[in-house]
Length: 97
Image (cartoon, rainbow, N blue to C red):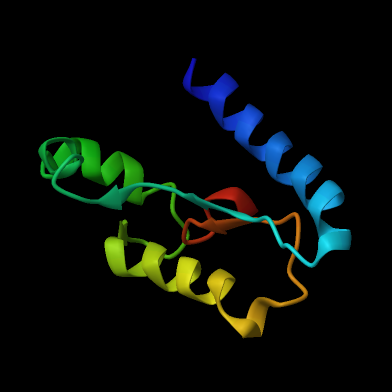
């Protein structure tokens, strides 16, 4: 279900960007990888699990809430006025592999 819902959100972003772009409305999404939060702490505090995750992230660490917030702030700012229909990975290079 997780993959299907993620795919649906990605497609919704693209369709709404096309439909709402002519109205001056941008539609984007943020796609984070493993982010250290209270909800992920139990798994990421397990050294074996964390090592398996970090070994697949080229930057060599999991993300933080601030990493995701920075991407959201950028997309909500005037600096991203021409960014539309983008799924912005905040993944330390995970998807670049």
